[in-house]
Length: 244
Image (cartoon, rainbow, N blue to C red; front, side, top):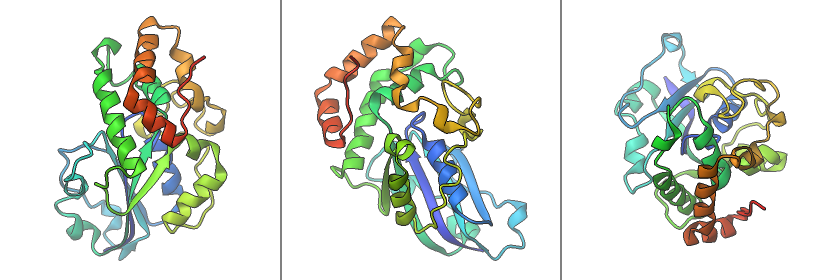
């Protein structure tokens, strides 16, 4: 079996990666494949039985979450048995998804599934990881080959931006799946699957406002807003850090 397009999604958890991954998946015609929430320890990919009689796939999406962005990232996201299962791969794209730091942190703090107690979240470590992803996004580092950078915030708000991404992936743009909240990742940290067919109704661009009533959250946001490196990175990305 051969594969026309392999898309690796690389993102920090709660950065909107499943929304972007689901949208890309819907742009790809059948037959296709989706590997969700892959973690570092998963080194081999399984061949679904439904592909036994298929000679080629139009595309495959692999979601990689919370991987450390280091020089060896390419070897980490590659499966040991990739060529055996996927065959000859025509086009590879590594899609780096990044979200506004305040909205990202708001979703981390709000998420009810991953941490029983918010106090257990190592939020300073997550801020440092966001910086690593931001530097890769801006080109200060170049650890990812065949890279397509996606700002989740701009992807959500701008049709022309999404059309540009489709072009980079050499896909026919239909925008199908944009307003779908997939069950992958459990849906939204705030709304779950309430808006599963009307994602445009979710206030994803101002999530930070919805957690300001918690004193600890306000402290975390002030820390982010005062971080010199975050300020510099956000300025280059045209991300507004004010919460007034």
